Image 1 (cartoon, protein in one colour):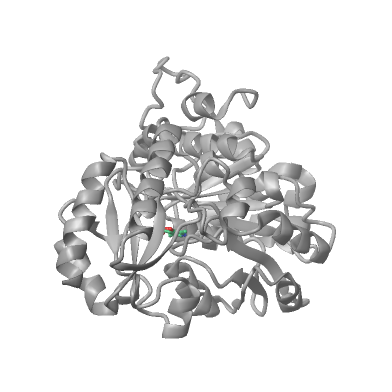
Image 2: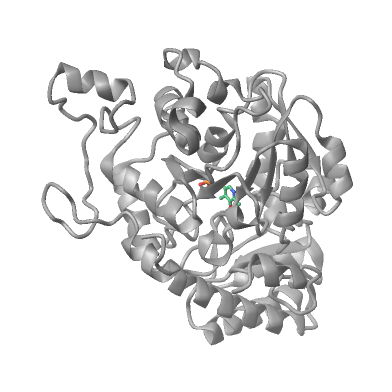
Amino acid sequence: MSDYAFDTLQIHAAAEPDPATGAVQVPIYQTTSYAFKDADHAARLFNLEEVGFIYSRLTNPTVMKLAERVAALEGAAGGVTCSSGHAAQIMALFPLMGPGLNIVASTRLYGGSITQFSHTIKRFGWSCTFVDFDDLDALEAAVDENTRAIFCESISNPGGYITDLPAVAKVADKVGLPLIVDNTLATPYLCRPIEHGATLVVHSLTKYMTGNGTVTGGCVVDSGKFDWSASGKFPSLSEPEPAYHGLKFHEALGPMAFTFHSIAVGLRDLGMTMNPQGAHYTLMGIETLSLRMDKHNANAKAVAEWLEKDPRIDYVTYAGLESSPWHERMKTISPKGAGGLFTVAVKGGYDACVKLVNNLKLFSHVANLGDARSLIIHSASTTHRQLTEAQQIAAGAAPNVVRLSIGIENVGDLIADLDQALSAATS
Ligand SMILES: *Cc1c(COP(=O)(O)O)cnc(C)c1O
C-alpha cells in the first residue's frame, strides 16, 4: 500500500472492506466493548500477545483505522489518535517524561501550546525551555541532561514561519533526543517531517485533516526509528514498565513500542480517547486532503500577494511570498506551497484590526483554522491573550496583526470582502 501516491493513499490506506460486512466506507463502530471469544482469548489480548479489541477507551476499529491512515500518509510505523491536538501533545510526551525532566521547544508555536508548555505541564513536574530554532547553537545549548525531547512546528502558527527541520533534526541526533514535530498546519500532503528526521509527528486533526470544522481530534505517529534503549533515558519504553506488568515495550515491540505504549498505558490511564463518530468525519475529510490543500495554497498565495501590495497593510508574513525570509526554506520543507494560514499587519494597529474583523462578511471570526471556509482572528486579543506582549511578538501575534486562514471559496470574493472591510477599518 505504501507504494501508492499520496492522493491514492488518502482514500485507500487503512480502508480495506470491513471484515464483518464488506462495507466499503469505514463503518462507525459505536460500541464501548467487544466480546472475548473465551477466557484464553481475553488473556492473550491483555498480554498484547494478540492484537484485538478490548474496550473503546483503548482501541476501537473506526478510530484505529484513522490512526493507521494518518501513519500511512506520514510514512510512520504506527500511530495513536486522541481527543484533541493538545491531548496529542501530552500523549507524545507522556512515555518520555517524568518529574524534573524538560523539553526544549521553539518560540514559534501555536499560542495554546506555549501556554500548555509554560504553565500546565509544570503540574506534572515537567518544564520547557523556549528557544529560537533558527539559532542552532542556542538550541543545542538549551539541552541539558534532563531534556527528553525537542519540539517544534513544521509550518508555525500563526507567523508563516517554516522550521529548518533537517538542521533541527541534526541537533536532535547529536544530543540523542527524539524530535517531535507538530505538522498541523502543513499536513502530510505539504510536508512529511519523518523524511526530514523527525521521530514523532503530532497533529491537531481538528484543522485541515478533517477540513470542515466539525471534529476536535488529535494524533501522534511514530517513525519507529528512534532507539529508545540506547541512552537509558526512556525507561518507560526500554525498562520493565511497572504500569504494564513489567513489559519491556521496546524489546518486545521494536518499532511499534511507542505506539503500543501510547495505547496500552497512555490511552488506558490518561483516557484522552477519540470517539468513533469523530474519527469517521476525519476519515472522510482526509479523502479530499490533497485537493483542499492545493486550493488553500493557491487562494492564500493570491490573497497574500494582493494584500502585500495594498497601502493599508504594513506587511504580510506568508512563506509563499517571494519576499518572505522563509521562501527558500519552503522550497525544500513544504515545496507544494506554504498552506492557507498567514498573518497581516494592518496600518492603524490594534483598533484597525478590531474594525477589520468586525466588518468582514465572508470571513468568520473564530478561534479555529484549516476550515473550508475563510476565517480571521485577532490573535493578540484572543488565542495569544494569555501571553506577554514580548511572547506575542515572538510568536508572530503582535497587537497590530490579524491571522487569516484562507478557505477554498472563490478567491475573487475573498479579496472583495477584504477590500471593503479594510476600507471601513482604515478610513
Ligand atoms: C489547533 C492547534 C493545536 C491544538 O489542537 P486542538 O485540536 O485544538 O487541541 C496544536 N497545534 C497547532 C499548530 C494548532 O493549530
